[in-house]
Length: 265
Ligand code: KIV
Ligand code: NA
Image 1 (cartoon, helix red, strand yellow):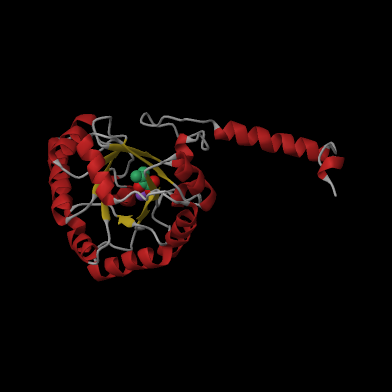
Image 2: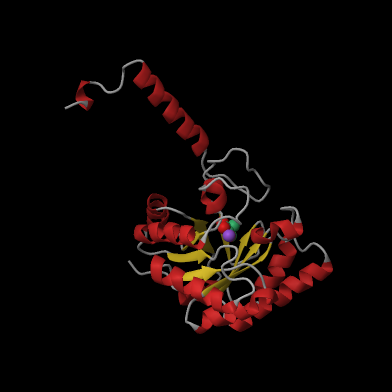
């Protein structure tokens, strides 16, 4: 099996072939997604929410991200694995950013990193790229800044914020980022960015006029019934499937149906 490369992702954009991306945090799910043919797996810091149960992405640590990334890398043969740099591991100090990125690459075996922001993190992006580490940008709704914005509402609806986003996207491309995630922004703005830039633009809640799509695996698999934003399409109802399975198991244990003779030695 040939592994997906940043070069191939670039070619896919040029050919108008859409890029598929999903989050993964563990070995078993990574194996399933990779076998199904996903192009990019993101070890997202959304692990803080869906794996650890935190309210925001802020608490997850670099060590915890590396643990998730190691597990994912062991499960894949073909996908390109991007690892989120967690809050506090890269902002405001480019030496620490480089150190954190090198730890992720060395200890997890991931193929690239992602960080949130534009001009504010310019020095960190330059430094990480100078070490030969592929960098994916992330603009629009950036969950690590949730306490600055106050809500998870759609971003960059105003002209000024939209222009800043386009400038940041151009800057990230100029610095050498291989792709950018745009989260929860108007479809028309995402289209403008995807048309203006030559690197792949991956959207989540950014409409159809971008080069690829990403979703949080637990959300698209319907594991969490409560989370139902407009941009989300659920492809399975794992919450119901898993609840039914566990309910049946409990009943079988209680009424002595499990295990039967064939299931015993
Ligand atoms: O952590 C994450 O899941 C992400 C995606 C939403 C892009 O950053
Ligand atoms: Na993230």
